[in-house]
Image (tube, rainbow, N blue to C red; front, side, top):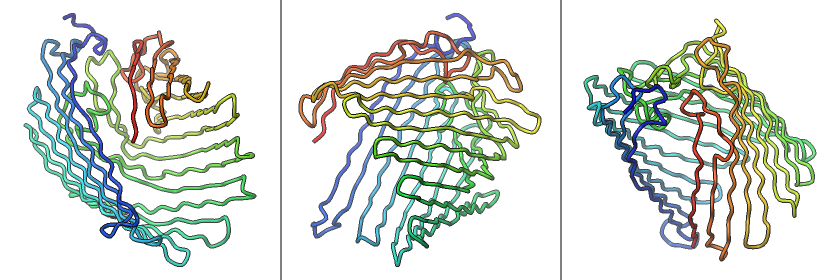
Amino acid sequence: GKNIKDYEDYSRHNISGAEGKLDFFISPKSILFPGSKFDLSGKYVKNNYRLFGSNNPGQLRQNDLNGTHLSFENNYSNNFNYSINFYASKLEMKSDSLQEINMNIEPQFILKWNGFRIMTSASIITYKVYSDFSAYNSFQKYFGSVEMNPMKHFSVKAGGEYINFEWSNYFKPFVEVSYQLNNQFVFSGTFKPFMKYYTHTDFININPYYIPSNINSVTENHKLFSEFSFLYNFAKNLEVKTFVSYDNIDSLIFIDDYKNYKEPKVETISDVWNLKTGLNAKLKTGMLGNFYLAIQWQSLFNKEKIYLPAVPELEVNFIHNLSISKTIGLVTKLEFVDGLHYQISSKTKSPSQLNLGIEVNYFITSGFNLFVNINNLTNKKYSDFEYYRHKPLDVLIGFEYQW
């Protein structure tokens, strides 16, 4: 093939796989585990491709990813319930001689007592990489919180998370406050620092063209995440929420897939500031359907005012859900993205992206419907970033059955 820089559009793909999910409920009147819920899901994805824009355009790359999730939840009583979750995944990047295994087990307990809601949980996460740069990591997270209502319409939730890595330890306290006024206005405030942990599997899920490096795993420390919001309800027909958030990130992780780099690159930038503000609105109009609007503006920069690529400054999402009759439903989706910077520290921006999608549902019975989903009707401009680039017309026809 041609050695071009627009690597996605000219890559050859052979993607196959399967995914399944089973939910099982036990009646509250059952003698054994009454009111319990079991969830089991699994997936397998095989992706073979040639990355023609890379430094080795003729190489056949082979990535296999499979995973499973098993959960159990039991509502022992109105005041006590417990659950346990188990996650496991395996990534095999055959062309890079890399195998990665992730396992996570997480028990959780919730107790309600004299107006208090007490929650505790623990995560034991094991991470193993087999490659030329082998690594083995294991860490634990312990979480605890107490929620109380000291007065009517006022609630406070406070707690903390202790994270034990092999190389360091972190304690993250948090507090959430909510006050409701006249059943229409809700004021909320949150201070919740947290940690993110990335592996090769996470990078593959973010960008399937990711090529591994000697970065086996990285942590992203959100030191000062805070959010304040205001929610307004009017006559049960209109709901409007505005918010503003602020964060200081010790080391921001992102995949820079600007096309001139030929291959997606994992980048880290230290001491990043993130400011966000936005509005979410829901409007129910009866015969005219339901309207949903989400607007978000954000800015990412550090002390040197370095702007980050592939992060939009403005995102607008609009959805209109209309029932034409008892059997036909129409969903209209509109997405607008603006303010994508070309390169780090560059003020030059990529063209705006506008996309229109339509979904038609035909409900044959209460549990069975046919659907036609059409996406990417208007996005004709090419972006220089894989995640926001031009997407061809996509038509999906199928059916859904619930019993």
